[in-house]
Length: 118
Length: 114
Image (spheres, rainbow over the protein chains, first blue to last red):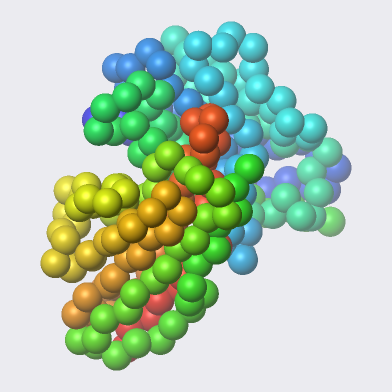
């Protein structure tokens, strides 16, 4: 079974600074997606960024980028120029990309609470 | 992208009663799921809502406790039956878009059982 581990229960960053959130995963599959979701106090799950395992290039979305190390099974999220609105719980998630009964199912990490200080 | 709505957004219920949560997607999606998020915890998959057939439940979740329906491609319901305080959680509906590379979530239903 796939597992996702976020070893940082809490992180903090000063506004305008850069912070990196860590995520590791375990799988025997070769074709999968990795996601970072943000969950503010409103509890809405917001997709921040996604990475397809077969793509070598790290995904980037504006101030958000990932460092995807497939061999090491590591998928960290870097937030540049942090803003107060970035404060939230961040979840790393894994999803198998092939068909079968497990397709579409997300396995989540434990989450990292990010605090942004003005 | 798909927009998912859920009703109710929150509810406070008495022990032993049941609550049905509705999930509506504004476009056709390939797959729909129900997740539970207990206080301060991560999300755990309850089941896959299959259109026109019985849902597929994850280990630890059973149909008698969490009956699910999905009568069409854009709508699903989750019922939490015979509730106890341990069922107090956020319940989230999720869907995979037609492009398969995105996964959307509803705003969640916060359930408190007294």
